Image 1: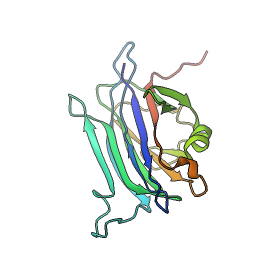
Image 2: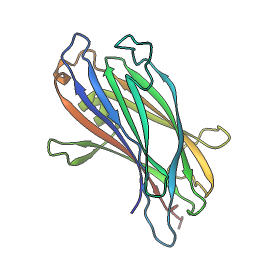
Image 3: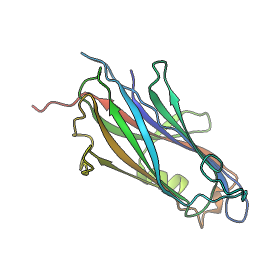
Length: 202
């Protein structure tokens, strides 16, 4: 069993005047095997925009207040992005593009997305985009693009062939201005993007 997982947001909200908190995140790849192995990986990533602040005034934000680090598997493929932001605040946002590559040794795949949060026992509980906003005031959306930059209307029906790469734009915004109940809490959620075999009609 292997999958493309985007674990997003371990958030600790402080009780400062602007509701400071820390965010960590990750992006991981997995697959489900039947008559051939699925082998996808993260081919790269780019921060398109963010309003992360230079909190310590040292002139450096990327690699300091905002850190994005790749995690590789035993074969050297990047299967996860670890993202840490400290601090984030009401109206903080991050727009991040991530390349998802179907490798030479793989088969054609389609992708599905699932969202989870982690309960007090660190068990994943499935929810949806509306749940993210309701529970954590996180607005989340994604958009997908093919290799020519054209939008992919429905990623769940789009076949990604071996040696091809598509791109997702992951957008996160913290809408926490008037939610003091989120202060002094730590919470975590995960967005899992799973590669599966294309479904045949019939």
